Length: 290
Ligand code: NAD
Image 1 (tube, rainbow, N blue to C red):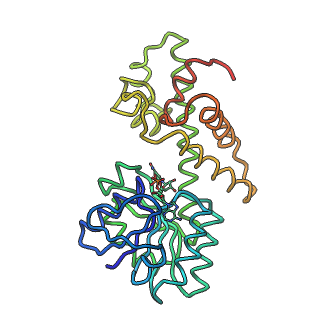
Image 2 (cartoon, protein in one colour):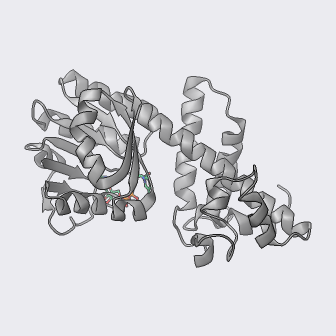
Image 3 (cartoon, rainbow, N blue to C red):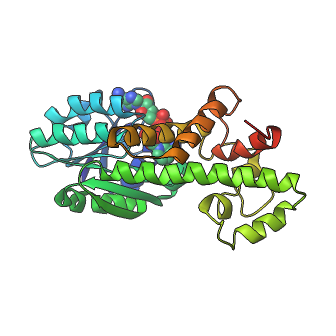
């Protein structure tokens, strides 16, 4: 397939490289990042999109996505599909789908889970919103870049799934960290705590797979001095998106709200910027009450 790839950063670069390795022709555009080997370089986003059957975007936020979509949609082929893989607010995802529909183009919001490791190894999970026909067209590309693609529903449903998932992740990580800090104060050995909780009803991905306690459980960023991994500021971004969505949908999400406030303080005033989101554990070790 002929593919345009716009946004070749930490995630987009390796995703585009995997498409090339699978035999697709990829033309890339990024304001700063150089294209990986085998990916052609266009001088503008519109130029990259002109001949493509699928235009993939992997950009920092909703406003940038809207700006790029405005530029790219008029340049696209009649039957091409726009597939955004960034994590953005649900409203931006819907607005971009509406822009594409106005020109009669199919579009998908297809955010990912799995981080830079998943992008590099082609093991991402895609959660996808948009029309079924576009999903079928892009599915072979999801299969190259990832191991699972779930069609979640109409435009915006992919972003909805992503921010709900990450709200659970933020909340369970905080709960796991504060429980370890409490266990310390109660004199409970961390290994024993892991052994019990990871096989009991308190288990979660945060405990079982990404344990925030160094030296406990499988390898995780905690074992590498909390170098990300998944940076705390990216978790904050996603928690803010879920609060923004909760606000506009009038949903009651008190735990998500508190998680957003705790990550906001952690990133902005407590030195958490640039650290993995599981570095909440040393934060709770230092501060017993907020
Ligand atoms: P990144 O900052 O490394 O890459 C974004 C790229 O977009 C940059 O190279 C930047 O130059 C480029 N860009 C910005 N404006 C542009 C424009 N107008 N035209 C063309 N290119 C432009 O970020 P990333 O880590 O690759 O993340 C990309 C998206 O994926 C984000 O929405 C992020 O939330 C999401 N995401 C990231 C991870 C992760 O672990 N890094 C995991 C899941 C989802």
